[in-house]
Length: 290
Length: 342
Image 1 (cartoon, rainbow over the protein chains, first blue to last red):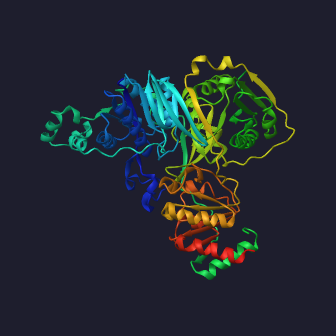
Image 2 (cartoon, helix red, strand yellow):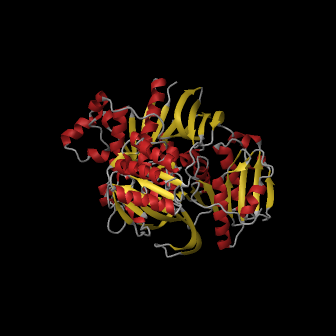
Image 3 (cartoon, rainbow over the protein chains, first blue to last red):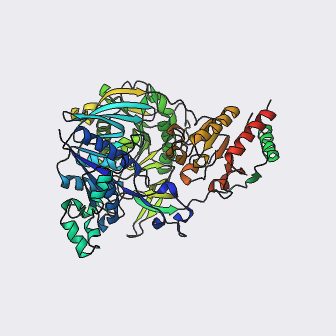
């Protein structure tokens, strides 16, 4: 059975490696100082999608991302690793969206895409850690969701079997297609880039990127339809302007602060035996340890 | 039932016990409800719910909604979501709190999407306060401030839902304190007819196998926590922390960076996206101290930070700062503890 698989992915600032220059003086994020990466758990989701494709010849894997035009970078990355195609949903009107406005916009894009059997995505993105967009898209599309997936055990007879990793154990569930499955970081790592695909697709570009190329390079891309990454606008996916971006977001950020912890008067010790032994004696004497 | 504008907590229930995280939220919910002058309500959805009110009323619950059907346990997404959606349409709570557990984080978004109400995940603090919209100038009173670290824990954001109800938030286990209001507190039980709230078609996902075991790791209750960060450097070096924890009678915890690097299992992660701990002694080894970590340990009585970097952010909240390699310092702590303890 061939399946149409959509993988939802996000390009995120690498919040795990935040340097001292990541925050501006005014307490806002200096995005320029953070490298933009493929959200890690979305790569786990991509791997599960590619495995379904391996098992079900003729299936297609399409990456769908919402973000800035430069998010085409993660689409190329996914194509190098085995995805068939990608779509960047990008529009100024989508900016400032909370999870609900984001899931509405992505659900509209999925509807525009049309014929889909299964939607995969990472459990959560490292810049927000909310894990909300997957279940919200499922609700907007009126289909079931399976969250915290660790392995897709198989797709058969219009149903998918999934092993879920929960706080204190595992659960195996069977869900009817179409459905949304969000994948944990504990799932299998994504396969690396394939050298042959890298050669074939390294010039794949979105319309925004193509516009910056020379006429000659544009002609080269035009002659090869597989090098064209799609870019969709809010209007193209028939998004209601009231439900997208900042206007469509029920949650508002009231304040953002750099946290200043009440600094304690720390006692500074060197790594020498005498000071460490004194510390231990003190902790024993005041019954903190022992 | 008419619109009531109360505060409701979705309570998780398994093996005859209401989950700790739900009781913690009832404790917080009671305080917020008092501040707002409204009732505290709870909803439990599942099977075999006899006598469960005895567990929740002492936390100051005024109304307990019970929805009992054997198909409602174990938890699946659509049926529980349908119950809440239909119940909330009737009683219109102004605030709904849930545990930021595998269940709450699966259920909350589905409910909020259907009701078009805002949801904030993993709050570390909840308060009531006023808000003025910077654009329209419209003023709001008594909104729920949903406070959480964001952006990988590098900032703390206060989120409000000015216009949509209920204002929904999830909170991790251990973040709020569990405290009985009154052993003899009397509330009302309302049994809801399941068929009015959930349709047969909602039962679409079938659980074919389930192995749930209680976590073997108990860092939440440990009096001493020895925690390692990315600076520990390797899985092998974490063994040193286990040695120290065993010597002192404590447990080993970790920062998210150490867990992400694969040095140690996720069960031991401390911080906003892990467990919150309040031990009498917290020894942070090679932990720089991102907000999201500090949020989960700052209430420890005594904090010792061992770090190469004399300016590591965590040092500012530490009682003792030892500047040095943890590979050198930890064995010395073990050695002098053994020498000086009886």
